[in-house]
Length: 333
Image 1 (cartoon, rainbow, N blue to C red):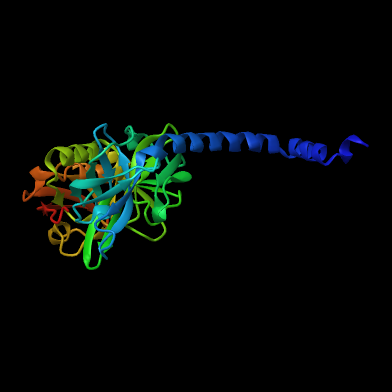
Image 2 (tube, rainbow, N blue to C red):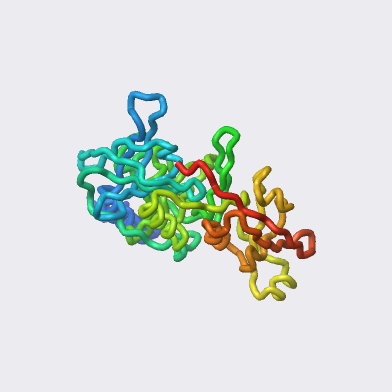
């Protein structure tokens, strides 16, 4: 029998000619990262059953253990004003949990499990993410514990509206990814290749987008305040924005390349009353330059409520100054 008559040998030879060996190597490296992240995080992600399972008001979601003493991070819209429920883990254990606090503006909530929990996940830093970077989503969609999907960071610094009936709020500075998310993934972990949690998955915007609330300096402050005080007093402007390049002459004048283009101004909000419009480009808020949603969000804490906030925008080739007075965000779960 000739050497090439062996089907296995022919396949091996064809693979060499077409680079299949290299593809297998890349695939193996990709698979290795995803499986390692899955093994690390799956035990630390809980399936949350919120409210009374026999009630029409019950719901499901995911949560990430982030302290040794049973604190779990999830989405505010997952708990949706409910005071507790049941957390189930991949090892088959379950225990009741109670709501510690929720912050709708960031769509983050903290609950505490009244029973043993797995060791905590490691919180990372979303500010180090880059578009195109591999990320892994771990959650419990449709009640299926330990479900893992993977993809890349599609965009950073998004600011998107979340609607529930006629109510509108804005989730700031979200991470957009093409990792598939399904109902029940909300509140689960978005992790980097080292299994560090860089985001909390959320599906509030719909439209088939994979979105996650970033873990960064601002959200760490929110999480810490929820743990200590049970709520975060947040100022609300009502802006939906996205980073946008500035015209070269303006960029040179200001010494920076980007501002924040307003995609939407929530009707009736402080921003609308101040005279801001979709299409305006935010340059400064409170005298500070802004170029990311986080740079606005970090100003929106208790000290800004009810105070005049000077804002400068670029509108139709001219600088425009307005004064907005943020109000307190209400309905914090």
